[in-house]
Image (cartoon, rainbow, N blue to C red):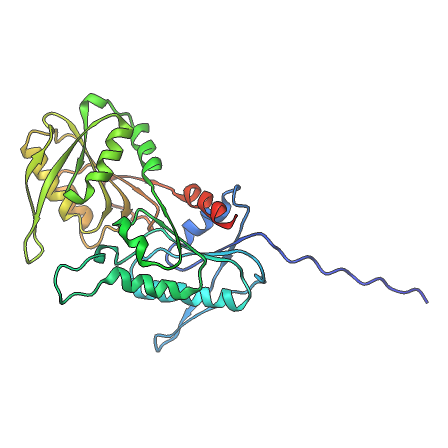
Length: 319
């Protein structure tokens, strides 16, 4: 009788896995496809029950395999935050080691400080929740304030989308003497200075005031904008009210109204933000893909991917 040799079981896949939450599947796939990372993409089916409970499942062998969860904090923020922690728990129980989280846009980042004693420190609350995910590292892109890094006990990598956004602006043709980079408020000055230096342009600042009922108004401009093409720079565009007020102000101070560009890492574009920007004279938008892109905005909108920036950071974090 001839003994049959045992059929060898295929070796389990040991490449890092990129696991997609439901908030931005496209970006997760793009990160996994970056050759430098050498990762495999793992979808994570999610099911919402009638009573509001959410079920996720990681249906692959990830034991002793590095795993990163990609989940940007787009609306609904609470649901996406909880889903990320459920995915992390599933990965941990299946033995994934080490684990990291990629959160391109961190919600509640504008609550990094309290303006009254009645308010919570929202950014810290979110940080403490994310720290419960057993992650060994976290990757964020252009946090609203660098001070937020200190709210986490987990190792943090804080990336900037500025280099890829600057390249996108420059590729459209920039005549340094004809363009001015404008910070729409005091909080964007540091970012605007970085863009101005990278593009070889001058910069200006618009002073912003916000009333108690949330109405934004701008009146003064520091710097020369007369007859210049304006490029506004900020970390995010939410309702667009700040940029719209700044656009009206620079035009009143002599800036060219023929073409005005708004650049931001995070394009939330909530409510009627795009219409607000269009009515104020903004003609072009440039943003990263930290959040799912809008469609049919009616404005020229360039979306630049941060997939390679994030993939390079993951490689570094896993060393």
